[in-house]
Image: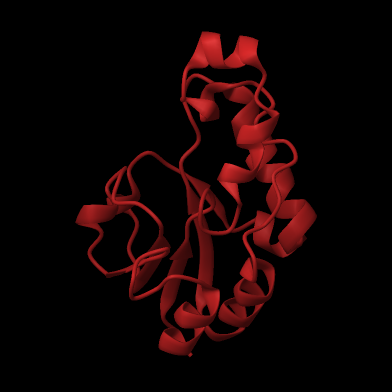
Amino acid sequence: MKRLYIDMDGTLVDFEAGIPSVTKEQKQQFGEEYDDIPGYFDDLPPVDGAIEAYHKLAAAFDTYILSTAPWNNETAWAAKNLWVRQHLSEVARKRLILSHHKHLVRGDFLIDDRLAHGVDKFEGEHIHFGSKRFPDWPSVLEYLL
C-alpha cells in the first residue's frame, strides 16, 4: 500500500477562517503571524470536502497527517491533536505527525498547500493543494483515486 501524507493548515483545516476573529490587540502584538496567537487553532473549520476526502484516501492509502506546529505557540500543538480527534476520528489521531522537517518522512505522496518546512525536498510526489492543477479536494481525489 502506498504511503500518503496530508498537511493540515490550508489543506485539511481552513486556516484563513480564523483571521476575522483576530482582535486589534492580537494584530498589534503578532502582526500577520496568526499561528503564533494562543488559541488561534482551537475552532478552525475543515476545508470544503476535506473530511470526506480524508476518509476516501485513508481507505486507499497508508495515510498520515503531517503538519507543522509553531514553536512560539504551544497551544497549537494540543489544538491540532484535538482537531484531528474531533474531525477525523481516534484512529487518525494516532497517525498525526508534527514536524518542521517534512522532507525526513518517507512516502509516495504529500498533499500540502506550501513548499515550506522541507516540502520542496520531499522524495515522493508533492501534490500542491490550492494550485492550478490541484485547486480543491475533488481534483486531488480524481488524480489519486
